[in-house]
Image 1 (cartoon, rainbow, N blue to C red):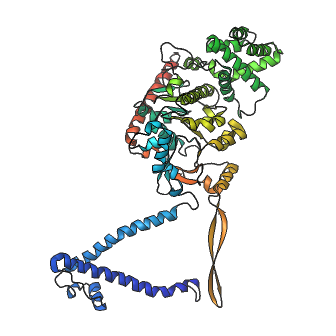
Image 2: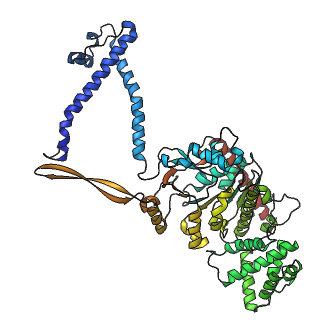
Image 3: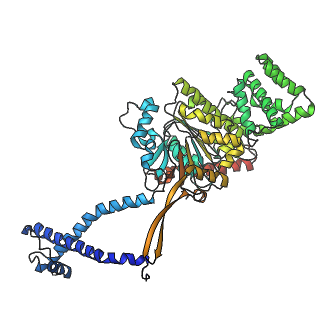
Length: 587
């Protein structure tokens, strides 16, 4: 019980009018429900007097004393009908109020996200894609990339195909099911996916075959696919820039933090640049290039560079060859370690000309609706340098094609760089991000943490990548305390209302004060539920969204059946391959 003079006793006087209001509502329902029942049964409009005697008769069940011509069940049925009719708008209003109260305080609401919703999004899509201007109606996938639903109950949010995205989430937080798979399935144009697992491949491959050709580049047997294509590794190395970029990808695959290159790494990149250039300009193969690396005294690449008019590059390579033996051998050994994956004949076969299989040409791929899966293991012996080289070739081909189209690809190309820090270390990716979106190349880079990106691109590179991304999704399981604290500061603070009650001899009083608190403290950001993400979009306040996993969409049953068939095919191919290896056959 509340003590005399306590806060609880302040509300006791309200019990009397509250009780009177309840009786009034009950009386009104029974009175009006009975009158309607009399009218419906053909006895005309006969409202009863609004008196205490009538109320007691209706409450006690003696409706015959008021309306003798109407059965009691019709009177009470009319009252129940009124309750049901009146409760519908009340429930809608209550749900709206509850949803409003459940919305994260001080985070963006639907009114602030108009650029990611509805008509404004469609208008922007028409401006970016000339092919949509004459279409009377656009499908949602024509207007942008699906991000998810605004918490707690929508609406659906989509980014523009001009946006470039950076997603940070821990393993099993929804990167594949909620981001990678939907992006591949819904892409309107060409697709490129990198991964070190076969999960996205198995779910999406069958669906992508319905819209275009599927190319699977799987040199290490992630999905145990047979080799049905080849890509000319040296095709883009006929210029110094192209040769240096390819060399940089191989160097980055073995060198954490590409911004920190010691003497041996830098010298190895210079040497590989010269060798790639010599092989490409002279039409030599990758195996010939490996032979030059194995024998530093071989003058063939120097002579080939001179023959094609690259005298300065030839002199530089010759200076390395003629230097101190210890220095020369150290440089060449470092270079050999960078391209060690090419010693595997199964990997080399994927990047060497093969007259019996079709060649993958990046310049053609970016103009259609084909799909390229780039699969590689991470860790020792990975083909990450080859994967990064091919991914970079596709992106550069997209940029060139966009320039020929007047500025942007139409339809836009989707590049999902899953496990980018492990299997697709494009050394200058932070620099590329700043303009890829404006070229119609929608890039999504998926990392497990901010620190993982720092390990590959360095602090400055990761900061540049973070700043250039116009859409950032931060999911569950981010354990980097410094980074999460930084995000909490970016989300900002809000005023928290704090009521205070005090009591004295003269009575009780109530006052209100305000204090500043973080909208989302670091511990809440770290503890975001799986399947949700904090959305940081350029120009609007942060918002909390719920990802849309592919298996919760309307066509999930059909996709699941195709995925099961794909998994079964992989299992059979794996068993066949291991059987061949046990019997002494290669491949």
